[in-house]
Length: 124
Image (cartoon, rainbow, N blue to C red; front, side, top):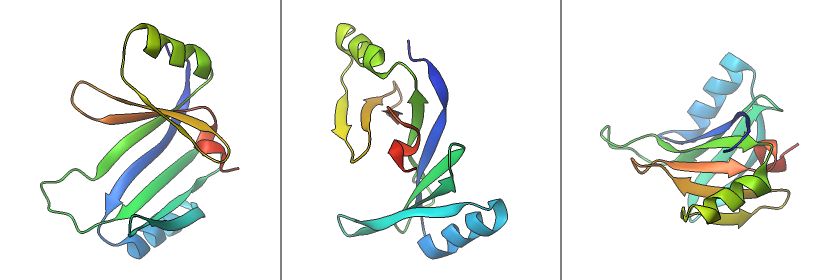
């Protein structure tokens, strides 16, 4: 079982990245942490250190589409959790980021869950 420390981040798709970023920064005092382009899609990470991060990708949405790509949990017992996935034959993908490791699993409804070794993937 994962020893969850907290909800690490939300990963969402937005129609207007600039407008949405400014909304959350102004209303909640979140700060921009990173930005970039992935496969031609602009993205940003905003948040408050050790509290919450929001990863946002810009894509014009059909109102029927989900805005959430995945949720991310930060856990204490990363190696133990990975061993549990292996022992229970639960499929996962492991990705090495510059400062952290993440494991990605899919829940029974198809929602992707990221389990991170360090809060915010080591952004701070």
